[in-house]
Length: 118
Image 1 (cartoon, rainbow, N blue to C red):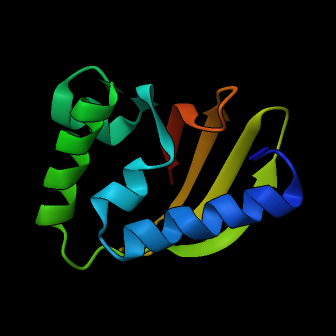
Image 2: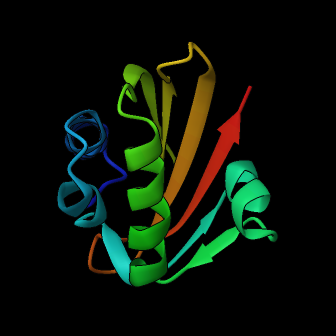
């Protein structure tokens, strides 16, 4: 999959949101490379440095988050494409605006992701 085209970016966003809204950790993680680097201000609060590195660390981090927030739900606002990246803009269950940017490896898996919150 080349996630930088409008069509594949929309498909990626839909599948990614379905995984989150279904609270399906395996569906969510299926988009990520084993050596994923995830950066987030919430990760900074929870792990101290803002980075979650590796698929197993990300599984652990998000599994806790999903368990703590059974009401979690995302509503898509728009999908933006760039050179090797996709940004998904959405509102979370608290009405907060969020943008996540995903950088893909040669296999079409997310190798680096950045979460930004309003």
